[in-house]
Length: 176
Image (cartoon, rainbow, N blue to C red):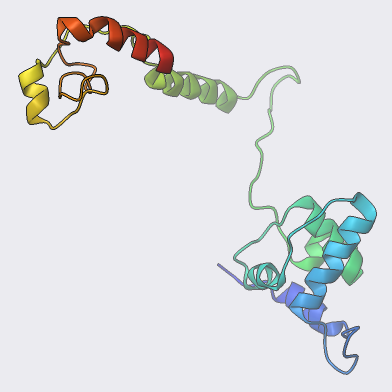
């Protein structure tokens, strides 16, 4: 991580409007940028002296568009590079035909579908498959039934006592 000495030097080269004998402070710069953004875009921003410090230390290398626009206007520079900002991400451009999707979009779509498939439950939550545990096993796991207070129903894999089957079905449909 490299610091953004360019931004810091530009800020320090501007005199403070509050104390003209001193350079502009981080807080003053943040306030001026916030005011500029409000006056020109009617959007409130949360830029503060801590964020200006992160910009100067290089922790944040590419602030959002409103911050960059405000900083350029307040500090009187022409473009982002004059403030020492460089984009952190480069978006790949297709090299083939204009309507052809880049290969990474296809692989992202396949990966997204795989993740969604993994997140989708195999059976709807209102269905209970083959029970894997009986009530005695559930009791050992300290699981409590929300219907009768016993430990027979909390684990959906548990074998449900016959008198609780309809109540469990209603409970699961209400939460499913």
